[in-house]
Length: 74
View 1: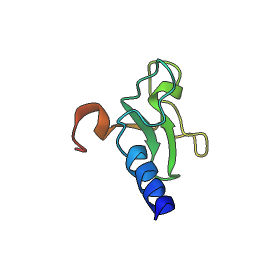
View 2: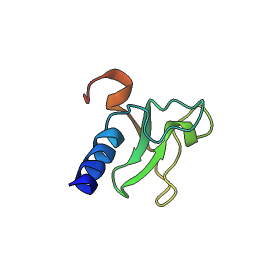
View 3: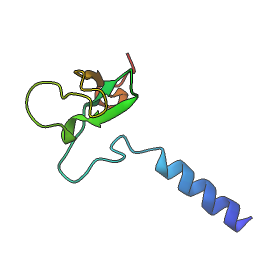
């Protein structure tokens, strides 16, 4: 049972942080998406002030807020 409890604690801990995946000093508020290609670029990885173009098809990507940034997934 000790191993099952340890695995359960690890899984619970991994889902409790709102900043999962953020690098030190970078708080992501969402990501840019290409719906046609299913490509995703985090906002902290994008350069410039305009939405990036999709690396696959070249179309402008749309920005989608993160649920963690606003508290809702709307």
